[in-house]
Amino acid sequence: MAMPDVSRPQPALPADDSDRLLRLRQLFPIAGPDITAWPRVPMPVLCTASILFTDLRGFTRLTERFAHDPAGLLEVLNAHLKKVLRSISICGGVVEKFVGDGVMATFGASGDEADHVGRAMAAAIGLIGANEALNRRSAADWGFRLDVGVGIASGDVVVGAVGSADRSELGVLGDAVNVAARLVTQAGPGEVLMTGTVYRAMEAMLQSELTSQSAVRGRSGRLEIYRMSLLGGRGDLA
Image (cartoon, rainbow, N blue to C red; front, side, top):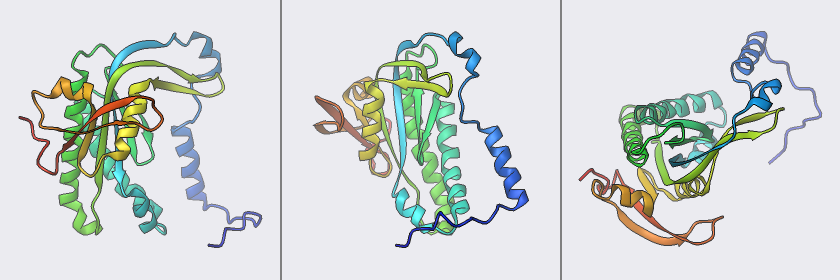
């Protein structure tokens, strides 16, 4: 495949597009707090929380489909994310960041929530259901489905500023974050993969199956991993 010649001058953006791009950059700055505020940033906080990651299955193929219509791709993605964000918000979660076509959300990392595991699970069930409703309404017009998977883990995390005075953001770090991020990569369409800790907190309410006791890439040791398939009939509330 021929690579673009970056040495050649590129055509200037139309004035309207250039103005919109500038306003977008102003609305969504990449820098963190003002440099002068950095010495006053509070110390990190340790807490126990549940971490939820979402990920669209087959999004790489979808980007290829929209290779000549990236604006159309953004419209479809935002239609999906609108459902995801609403489900998380209703359950009291906080979207910490967007990760490609998915999100990382926390429950219990912004306040004392003893029921953070249940809230994370309710959000997972809600967002998969809302995404399926979106498919029923739009898939025929789109010519494809959007299939989402979810990974959930629970454990101790630290909440604090990541970066420096030049550029920073609020970060949530811990083993549970790493595990949830790995689990979502293995979750199939309409599936929630969760750790044994999450499962045992919810086993009286959910019908799930132990899928494996395996290692998670990037982490030593083995984990019990439970699978709940909402579209396959095993994810109903008991």
